[in-house]
Image (cartoon, rainbow, N blue to C red; front, side, top):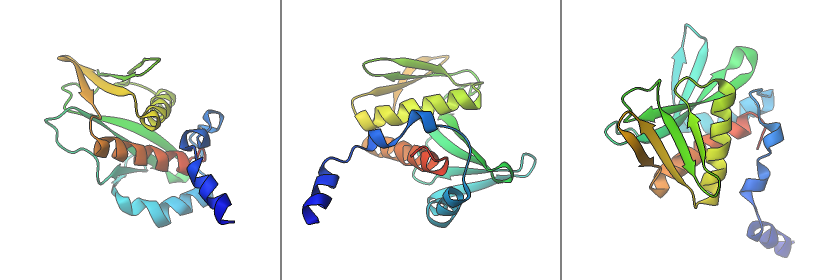
Length: 173
């Protein structure tokens, strides 16, 4: 039994656990309970009364507005059993007109300023995969040009944890 546990730990592939075909916004009651009971305490919560949405921002995210950064926020619509992922740029002059690039063996550029939920989900999925690969570089573009982001292990770890929680919440992980 111990050998089996050691083999599972040695050959655990976190990237293969996330299934692209399971990506979506639907939240099952069991996943909602898991998130509310165990994970929400790592987040700053904000209730948007007008939309009836609850926003969860990771406490260990980058908060310095002078440094360009991209954080992800989990947006929950508990009334309809749905959750969305929302990229939030920091250090960008116009938050409605910015681009985000993942530079790896196949570069992806996202124009996320006015992106819809599906585009945000695709960017989050690709970001999570790139962070797991650990060889990608990330850039944010505003009117001043491209700026590298997610340079440190702590920044990547914070984004990875938010995305992991979101994918667990929506049943893709």
